[in-house]
Amino acid sequence: MAGPGRPRTFVDLTQLLADAFPDYPPYGGAFAEVVPHLTVGADAPLAALRAAEVEVLSRLPITARVDTVSLLIEQPDRRWRRARTFPLAGNTWAERPHRASTGPTARVRP
Image (cartoon, rainbow, N blue to C red; front, side):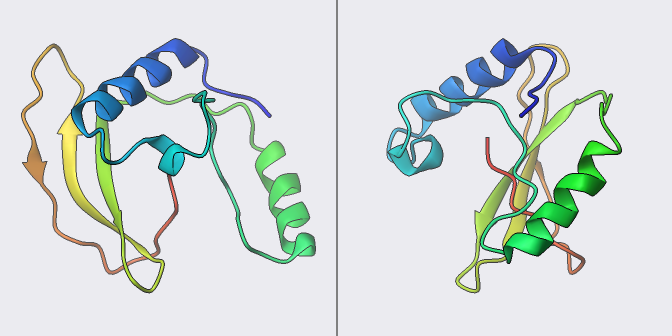
């Protein structure tokens, strides 16, 4: 599994969030160490997961500039809704409300 080019940045950001919201530890507290990664599929048939792996591997590496992070809230139907977006530029943490999307959703966890 490949991780981000600067994993320490992701680990540090995750720790800041864990410190700010101690009642909501990363991964529900299931793991002692945060390993930066992207979950592409979960709870799907093995054949679908293998097909997704082939598709994703054919498109790696991904290079992108990340200038915001989003707070996602899992809904009772297990879909995720974006609640807020936070810019990462500079040292300013000005939060910005975000309207819920009606489009496809993804499970993205720090």
